[in-house]
Length: 150
Image (cartoon, rainbow, N blue to C red; front, top):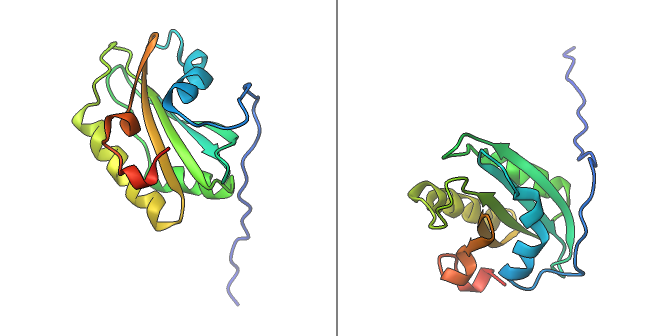
C-alpha cells in the first residue's frame, strides 16, 4: 500500500488596508495602493484580488526583487488568486528608478499573466506601475485587451 500526503492550501491574513467599495478606475487602484509602495528601494510586485463586483477582497505581496526587476511565478500567483476565490485581479508593482514606462519584461510578464488568468476564468483588469506620486496603467494605455479591463 502506498501512502500519499494530504494537503491543505489557504491564505493567511497578515493585516489590512482601507479600501473603497469597488475599484472602477486605475486612479482608484493607485489611490488604494500608493502608500504600500512609498520609499521602497527594491521592486515589489503585488496582486489585488477582487470579487465579481470589483470589490477588493485581498491584497498580497507576490514578490520582492532587486532595484530593476522582480521574478514572479505565474503558477503561484494563479494559485493564490484561486484560493482567494478572486473573479478578477489587478497587478501592481513599483519602479524604484522612477521610470514609469513599462519595460519589455513587464509587458511579457503581463501578457503571460493575462493568458494564465484567462485560462482559469479570472479577469486581469489592470497592471499599474507605481513611481513616487505617479503611475502608469496598462489598461489606460490600451496594452491590455479592452474587452477584459475596467
